[in-house]
Amino acid sequence: MSVIKKSNIKFLVGLFCLFTTTVSFAEVAVIVNKANNATIADSDISRVFLGKVKAFSNGDKITVINLKFKKPARNEFEDKVLNKSASQVKAYWSKLMFSGKGKPPKEFASDKDVLAFVAANQGAIGYIEAASADGSVKVIKTF
Amino acid sequence: MKKLTQSLLFSSMLVTYSAHADIAFNGFASIVGGVTTSNDEQLDGYDNTLSFDEGSLFAIQASSELGEGLSVTAQILSRGENDWKPDFEWAYVAYEANDNLRLLAGRQRIPFYMYSDFLDVSYAYPWISPPAGVYSTVINTFDGIGAIYSTNLDEFDVVVHGIYGNSDGEISVDTELTGKADAIFDNITGASMAVTRDWLTLRAAYFQADSTIGLLRLQPLVDGWSAAGFNDIADNISVFEDKSEFVEFGFQAIFDTVQVIGEYTELTTANTTVGDEDSYYIMVSKQFDTILASITYAVDEDHADAITGGVPTGVSPQLDALIALTNGATDAQEVDVTSITLGLRWDFHDSAALKFEYIDYSDDLNSDNDTGLLKAALVTVF
Image 1 (cartoon, rainbow over the protein chains, first blue to last red):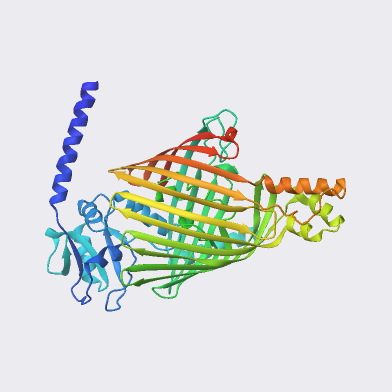
Image 2: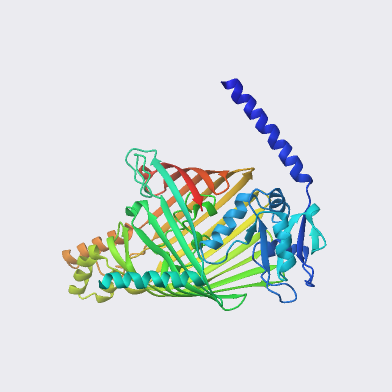
């Protein structure tokens, strides 16, 4: 019995390593609408995604789009750009949600859905796997 | 029949309403078990039999955007220690005047502390509940109006939160001095301000209120001093529309996986027998993947000055007895407690965490009260 358990653990650890390795090679692209001519300083990107900056430099209202939990690009983005673990991000939005100070961004299931929304909404900003980016949106930064 | 019409009317209202606006439901819960390590000491409501109701809570929040910047939110919270009786913790209408200014009317939190806004959302902070010495005001919510102004000055994010209102509910304070007593706080006025830049947040808050606390247990003293002709002292024993003042300073510093948080608070109620409270804590935590380990050092010091200074002793036995009893009441409020909390938080799931805590209390006035408290909690947001 314990032999089976051990091998299970080994398998899981192996799987986990494989997973993290794959993830850390994926680049994440921050995208906005093609018509968006605002400039965003690199240091502002995390503040935008944490809801602290609510308007672009041109005055347009920002609509932040997130990927669903457990999407590799989301882990990557939260780690590299927001500098927070997944549970820290969740805790951050819980604080705002239960004190009436803010709502977490809308979540989409796939890069394709994020692309489509950003392409159709001028004030939108989101992130996707860099490889998924196409000409329908403007990439402002890759991490 | 009337009832039926009413309920029909109500449900048709609901139907019409939901056609216009979606209601979002969210919630959070903590299931906390705790037990003290010594045989006869009670601490924060815990004793030496494992208890699961003290500290456990369940909350549901419903909110709806009405458009044009208006939204309504209600949060209903049940606490195990109140026999799970549900209470409206928040119930307000908010108006987003612009990107910087948000106005709130209704029942809401008094932003006393760094964690006031999400005091019960254990998922949002390292501890099972925030340090009890600092987080010790008898009220946390009020009914009235609030304004939250947030802005960005270069790389500084600034949030100013001002409030005005009352707390006239059935709040009872239960201390050694008062026994169970009803408390009313009027004209609660004040503001907090927090400034964040990158890894550092600094916070300060000031509030004042007119406090009235029904100190029935001390009424004989009030009567005694009035009869003896010392109306000043009689006034100073009772807490009737006396001004309470609250001051807080806090900081939060994040260095990659290490976090340092500290808060200092001072609470005074002038011209009363209610003691002044000075409290602070400092917490250091480190994140190891899904485990957060923390250590918190906290100090809670209360002191009430004797109010019988101007009264001559030895004049009459009755007067001497009054002096002794009154000094006893102020002396009894002396508190000097130091605690060290060791905590672990394990984020084993995307919206739930397990927490373990050991709190070691030492009473610097009476070491017989020293005790330890062991707690475990399952906390979640949904």
